[in-house]
Length: 113
Length: 113
Image (cartoon, rainbow over all chains, first blue to last red; front, side):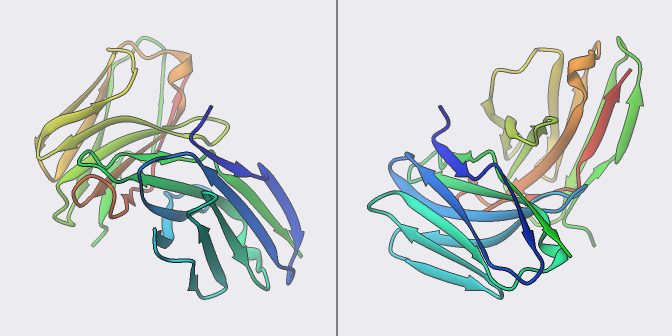
């Protein structure tokens, strides 16, 4: 069982609509959580980073939330565009000297015109 | 001025061959990684080097051998290629141990026929 679970596995929405992706984790002790966007044929690119004390962080039309008590994060995309079609990967890092990170399996988002 | 560059971008080869993938980063990062992304798009860590020293070696067949001549380079050599090795291989780098986020290359799509 992955320590970082994402849902849904895939999602199809119409252009202009909003959507929310979920990330639940059991990683402990927690250091930070990042959301990455991976376009087809490209490497993942960081969208947001959230530490233990942060609840919300925005990057343009992307807003990430974090509830460190329930160990849940969400990525909300507003007014979706065709270019939002990609895989979104949640990555949680441990607070330790090793600083290892655990990757979620990703949510594939398809935005249709 | 690409931050993490890997070559080649595409590699098609026959079973049993030996091949190498090269990776270079110009970010001054201390740590470099190899990830494998299978057909389901799950990213799995293979190896991690910190200042030329191997720090993560997941359960990977010993046909895969990473080599880090200096902290800016991490190459991946694969012996006796098998059909199951077909995947996209991503190189990444980070400052320290990944807690500060990863910068990924654009991937090498390996197809073994």
